[in-house]
Amino acid sequence: MTGARIERLVTSGTFSLDGGTWEVENNVWLVGDDHEVIVIDAAHDADAIAEAVGDRRLVAIVCTHAHNDHIDAAPALADRTGATIWLHPDDLPLWKQTHPDRDPDAHLVDGQVIEAAGADLTVLHTPGHAPGAVCLYDPALATVFTGDTLFQGGPGATGRSYSHFPTIINSVRDRLLSLPPETKVLTGHGDSTTIGAEAPHLEEWIARGH
Image (cartoon, rainbow, N blue to C red; front, side, top):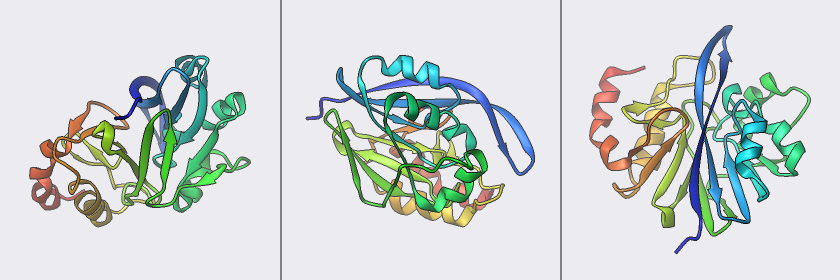
């Protein structure tokens, strides 16, 4: 049984791509115990995230994808804590738009497991919202962290550069809806859901398109 617990921090800022900018609120997820922790998506506010980490050792900053609203605070948080920034290499072009002078520290690979504080987060490469988008699944926590790949009510947006609707549908169907239906879906924005709640709507999403 895992000893890890999940904490949620909501931070506010902007998302910019293709010449547009929007106000957004992001979920920052902390997975860990009293001693060490992983941050999933260091969004907007390095100070607030560092405060949530407290005196625990920050093992890793895992980026579900490289849209600026999910990575803008990652370098500052890494510099402060010494944590490793992980990103799938297919999202490096997006990363470079936000951080041209700072590379991620390590590349995520489909199937790898990131461990901390009793949590075992398996990387699932789920392109579509972004080429290097990943989800992080921990069976012991019965939880998948989906970034912007799957939300309550459907898949993430695919109307902008580097995104592709048929690809995200394949990712959701093949990599996520095959998980146990009771699996909690903790998203990059907004409310949580479950795999079982979202699975029946797949055909409806395909018919509606993006």
